[in-house]
Image (cartoon, rainbow, N blue to C red; front, side, top):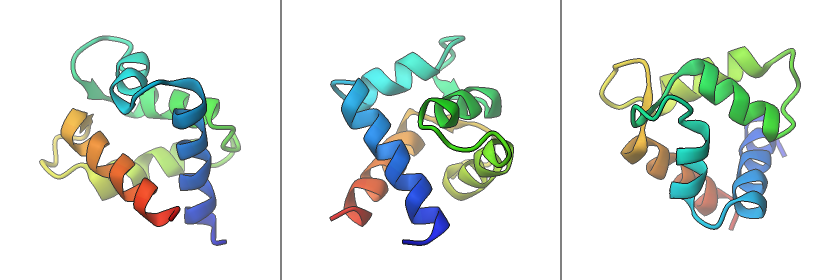
Length: 92
């Protein structure tokens, strides 16, 4: 399993073990309630997923880069849902 797959697997485990739905997970990490996950909110998600502190910032930036379809620098609900669906598909 490559590094990317290992990180995505940890995120999936966090969401499935601690939240009833992806919507619940998104709402939990969207601390300011603006409907978007900022980099600092994604870093907190990665911390909860037990991603090493050394690489959390890099991984958060890469997640935004990879899933921020409207290039606003945030992950909104639709982008988050797309990412979760992709993570789920990769784990099958």
